Image 1 (cartoon, helix red, strand yellow):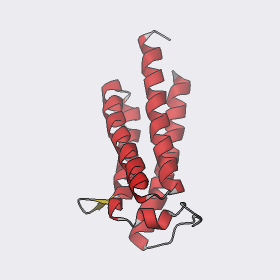
Image 2 (cartoon, one colour):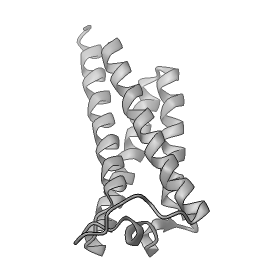
Image 3 (cartoon, helix red, strand yellow):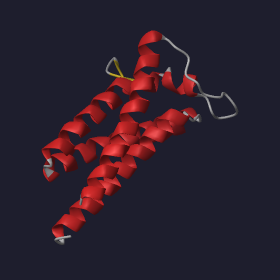
Image 4 (tube, helix red, strand yellow):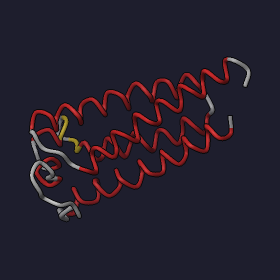
Length: 134
């Protein structure tokens, strides 16, 4: 079970780093280090109307989500981790849907989506192993 927990922490640290960078870029109007080639265009994605929900930057919501993930893991409460997973899944689906509508891809957003989905998968595997007494 410790390996599962370590993988979760590693993924969450990656998520914190990426979402911190996106949040910093948003609030400082700093251009992201991202190629603008074909459908790859981080600036267009992160400044689109989909980059805000009720006036709150999606990047900040992602940062808050990953900060909450740290608390969930520290609590070792599987119910809280599952609740976080629902939020993470919804966040990833919103991000993927937004990019699909725009017809553009942000490599940072896709990376965060992968981190969220991998964290959910690892949490599920950990819960199943715990349920089987491993």
